[in-house]
Length: 100
Figure 1 (tube, rainbow, N blue to C red):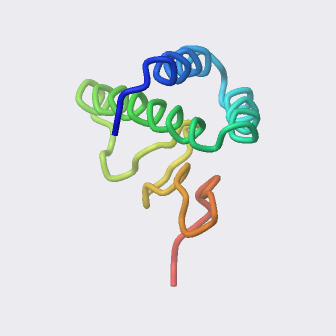
Figure 2 (figure 1 turned 45 degrees about the vertical axis):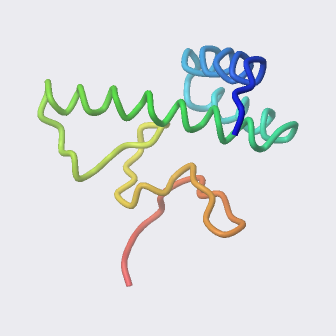
């Protein structure tokens, strides 16, 4: 795999734009990005999730939050860690419930 500087700059620029948005605006913008370039959307989402994960880890350390109940980019609980991922040909948008 080769490094594409222009692609990285575009991805980073979108990350910087999206990180400042509230969750509703962020999701809308991600959908627009995905309509043009689904792979770019996934790259940006991975950066957002990584950033969120590092903030959550620091928050857990400082404030004692439960690490067994991670939160998604929108702040909702996601105990399975699947929100924002593609499973088969489906994109998981939100956690509804668990059981069996």
